[in-house]
Image 1: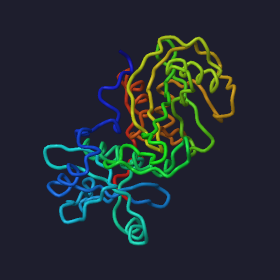
Image 2 (image 1 turned 180 degrees about the vertical axis):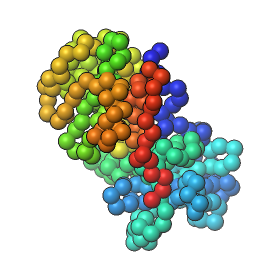
Image 3 (image 1 turned 45 degrees about the vertical axis):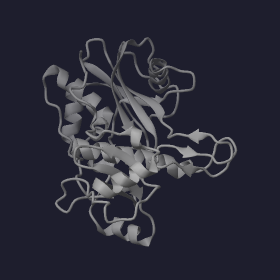
Length: 318
């Protein structure tokens, strides 16, 4: 099928078993921590958000053993593989802030594409849980402070007895092409870097299917109607702070785009060679490779057997 990715999106990779049966059992978690635990330390880095220390050689996440540390019942349990049990904590305070400024760190946006499948999965999982907990400290029904359940995948309200779980907001992201596949609809938001163009996207609304959201968003952002061959491609977590991106392809007649909202400052049909030329002369910048948008666009660019531009914007560790 044209445009179908050859592999999973980069933030959908993982080799760690989430080991859900161990969650909520403090004694089992303590035993894992003391036996073969490894710790992913999240720190807030200015201008980046949550980041984790990198190994000295810059090869991946620095995951020190937990065996010599006091067991932290508030740590997020990320799962296990044949080598270790993995936990994550958010480190705060002046020492963590100083370390975030002076030590090599890796974050998902800039370095997620260069991480191994294990490290990409661990960091995506940890950031998603930490982002959820940072903004969901109270019961949405009664307002009481909630207690994080051991393992960190839910929070319990001591007043009304209900459990709260991490929120995930589904969003569709779609590449619309002409029926022959030669031209694609790309747009840009005013807040993006100069020249950045991407697929159209938007959140799924209440009571709406993902396919309905694809049709509605394309109509709102580009004024294009009569979509055909709406088909799913792949999905990717995007924990900034809590999205799940649902990738789609669709076809439409090449009508002039007439946006019905003000979300995009430009939206146009582009031929593959025009995209390649824009990248070559610097007038067009595609999304970074860590995003599912780039994966979808690269899939389309490669359908004619031509060049798929490399991503000059990959940064490994900073």
